[in-house]
Length: 317
Image 1 (cartoon, rainbow, N blue to C red):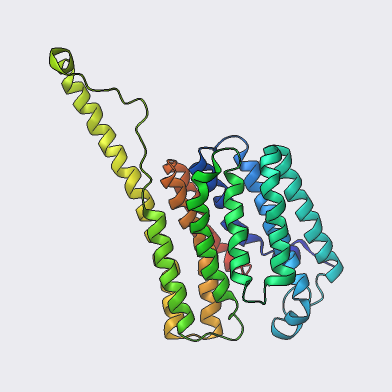
Image 2 (cartoon, rainbow, N blue to C red):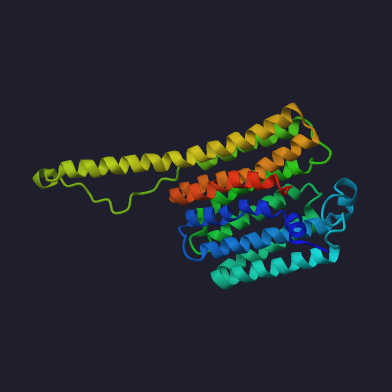
């Protein structure tokens, strides 16, 4: 009989902690953070779980040889149940996105779902696989931005997509191991991703009053100096936070890839993939903070250590 833990393993439930940050980062960049953001994040999680179930259904024969402990080849979940779960989660995810975000959200949720299924059924084992999976994550970021100015979220979407490319490229060598060239390429990509997330987006301070010359402008100068000093301090923290979170992301994920450079065995590759999945919230947190939501960025990044802890119980790969 299939248990809840079997289903959690099938959809790699803890790895879903890496998903809501896509939507939050997109919404922050587009100026669209609001009451519907959590619901769009929920839709994103449903689509992610759908993709995981569809992935195991598509790989059931390969897993019977390479990973017989997985839920389908071990007999704990039937192929029919896995496929039905994937279809149901997909419908629920697209439906929820459309219900809370209207046509604009649906216009992104539908191609996102199609890309997920296209990856699992067609592109996964082809040269296009990493690019298709990267597109999935990029669309996920844009889903969060659907209520605002999409164009402002494109840099964040590209950053998350580039990170996803590195993880997917590594994941293709989880069983066989890799040569040293692959982790060197993905490590270089991670450095570029972290640098792009740390770059601050110039923002004009809201409500800044113009300075006046003469005697009238001199009145209250001490008070203005105090306010300006506080604003400078806040601006400094706001600029430093994305840098710190991007550095945290690069240190954790980069260290795991450096281990693969030294020892490109299958076990090290799987560890690096896991680090890429569980470390993504730190990158999303940096992007969220860069979008002007510093405290929310910290909250998003806090999912990274939690994901690592849960990954010890249920593998994210």
